[in-house]
Structures are given as C-alpha cells and as structure tokens.
Image (cartoon, rainbow, N blue to C red; front, side, top):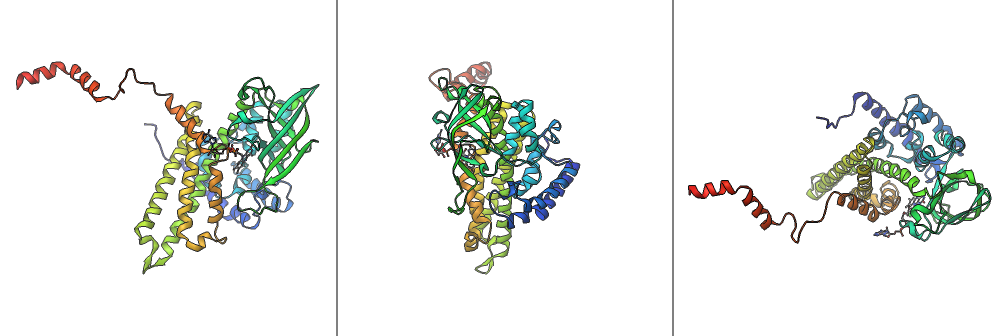
Length: 435
Ligand SMILES: Cc1cc2nc3c(=O)[nH]c(=O)nc-3n(C[C@H](O)[C@H](O)[C@H](O)COP(=O)(O)OP(=O)(O)OC[C@H]3O[C@@H](n4cnc5c(N)ncnc54)[C@H](O)[C@@H]3O)c2cc1C
C-alpha cells in the first residue's frame, strides 16, 4: 500500500524551521521594501546586507536552491518536497530569493543547465545559481502572447552573428536583469513551433531599447514597473549565444514553463492559506448583532468552502508534483495544466471572501488583502491564460477515450440490457422455468 500523506519527521523538522524563519526573519522585509523588484535586485546594497546572511543560513541548513540536483549545487529534493517548501515560501516574494528558488531565474537556470554549452553555463548559469545575477525571459509580444503563431520578432544569421529584430512585452525583471533569454523566429517558412530559436542576450547589447517598464494594476503609473516593453533594434549577438539548436525554442520553453507553472501553484497554496488565516481570525474577532461573525451560517460557508477548495487544490498540486517526480511526463503535463487553472480560481474565491469579511478595512490599504486581490487577474494570465491550459487538460484527458463504435453511445441502455440478457441467458431461462 504505497499511498501516504505523511511527511518524514526529519523533513518536517526542516519545514518547521523554515516556517518560523520565513515569518520572523523574511516577511518583515516585504513591509519596508515594497517595490515589486526589490526582492530580486541583487545590486541593492541595503537589502542585500540583510538578504545575504539569510541566504548563508539557508545554505548552512542544506535548503538552498532545492529545485536543483546536486550536480548544480542543490539538494535534488524533487517536486513533492519542493511543493511542501513552497507552501511556506509563498507567503512572501522575499522568501524565494532567500532560498534560491526565485522566478524567473529558476526556469532560466533550468534551461541553460539543460541546453547550454559549457561556456554559456559558466557565463550565465553559475552566477544565476549563486544569485549574483538577475535574468529575464522575453517571449510575449505586444500583439501576441498565448498564440505564438502571431509572433513577429525575427532573428537571422549575418556572418558569425545573429541579428534580432522585433518587440517583446511584459518581460519581467528586464529592468534589473543582466541578460535576457529572447525567443525569435529564425525560420519563417516552417510552423513557428519548429522555426523559433532562443538567444542569450546581455542587457547591455547595443540596440536594446526599453520603450517602457509596465507596472501591474494598483502600482503607480508614473513609476517604472517590473515588466519591460522592449524593442530589439537589429540587436547583434555572437552565434554562440544561440541556446540549444536552431528551431528548438518551443522544446526549450516547455522545459522551462512546466517547472515555473507548478512552482507558482505551490506558492499559491501559501498565499491563499494566508488569506484563510486572516479570514478565520477576523470572523472569530468581529461582532455583529450580538454575536461573532463566525456564528453566522453564511460566514461559516465562507470558511468551509475556502478550506475545502484549498485542500483540494493542495492535494492536486502535490499529486502533480508526484507525477513530475515519477518522470511521467504525459501525466505531469495534464496535472500541471490543471493546477495552473485551479490556482487562479481558488485564489479568486478565497481572497474575495477574506477581503469581504473584513468589510471596509479589507478594502483599505491597511490590510494586504487589496494587493492580494490585485494578483487574482494575473494568476489566470501569466504563463498562458486559463483557457489554453483547459485545452491542454481536455486534450490529454480525451487521449484516453475513443469514439463509440456505432450510432449509439457505449452506455446506451437498450444495447447494454440486450448484452446483459445474452450473458445471463441460461440463468434467466432457468428462473423463468422455476416460475
Ligand atoms: C504578472 C505577469 C508576468 C509575466 N511575465 C512574463 C515574462 O517574464 N516573460 C514573458 O514573455 N511574458 C510574461 N508575461 C506575459 C504572459 O505570458 C502573457 O500575458 C500570456 O501568455 C497571455 O498573453 P496575452 O497577454 O497576449 O493575452 P492574449 O493571448 O491576447 O489572451 C487574452 C485573452 O484571450 C483569451 N484567449 C487567448 N487564447 C485563447 C484560446 N486559445 N482559447 C480561448 N480563449 C483564449 C483569454 O481569455 C485570454 O485571457 C507575464 C504576464 C503577467 C500577467
């Protein structure tokens, strides 16, 4: 009987330490440095004075960059353990930086480790793994995101250089990144899935023009946001900056986004639990009509529905992680797409209820619930809209089925009853005979 919902006691001890460490040492940083790029900015000397010793503590305890195998300096814990860790780290963006698991660097490191040449690994991978450098993934374009067939950014060979021309939108962290991983069409004569390539482009390369840095809703319009709108004006990189082979961009992207999506889902568990914690504390503290809110049935429904949704979501995330660890790529794909869809929905439902039971205070800027609510729309968009992931789930599920043989469905009762009568014909005859 291999099913088991228990965490090994030794690992549970690590999780307990992490929980206290995140709450006491890391979460307070988010209250003082609140720009969305602050956690990731390795050049900010003030915040690094706090972050670096915390990272050392994490390394000492063998919890640094646990998504990586030992060959890359991680512990190779696998996705299930990482999910349990991310359930704690997701409380604040700062925690993933302190534990060396911050997006998009994790995904970017993963693809360089997988597809990079020795030289590329030395130049880009090692500094990323040491959190000495920030990276950016530049794929979405202003006119197209979910459908790569609409992409226009091109790259072509000129002597021993590649020339990149086009625009990219919502390239997160571009403003503080040392290098960008850019997807561009290198062979327009074949479908984009076979004709696009990936390039490693230092941000200082001539021709890179930041048109603006878009912020998320709720962030001030007159200050630079975290998501670069970039024009690549015939940007030249040496041929050795091609990542993987020509035409391999989508194979590479799949390696990257799979991990990224499940890690986001894992962190979302932490985030929505934080909303449930706030909801429960509030309904036990606030009185109306002579009793606490928790006595009202509709409020009990909020608590119960939130708990049920979070637990369902958490188990689905862990199950997806388990499929990843077993190396069943097909199953992992289905479940990763499923958790991506569910993350957006559970976040929406639980944060809305938590905010709602806080009344005016919940709507105010004196509680974190407003900014949690701002996250809801982008959870269903980043790494692809929910509709697209639903299509993936549906296609994978449908692979297990085939059309019915004839005009009627295989569960058509008249056909099934006729078959059952035939199967038990002897018995039925005998029964009739006995009547
Ligand atoms: C916070 C955040 C961070 C991001 N970071 C990055 C980054 O670092 N690098 C990067 O390259 N990109 C990044 N993105 C962009 C993200 O990947 C795209 O926004 C996403 O792929 C959707 O593309 P789009 O915005 O162009 O929307 P569109 O593709 O235009 O889709 C808009 C809407 O159309 C509908 N739709 C689209 N396709 C379908 C379909 N097949 N079936 C049914 N309905 C459909 C959906 O309702 C969808 O929400 C980020 C986005 C966010 C919100």
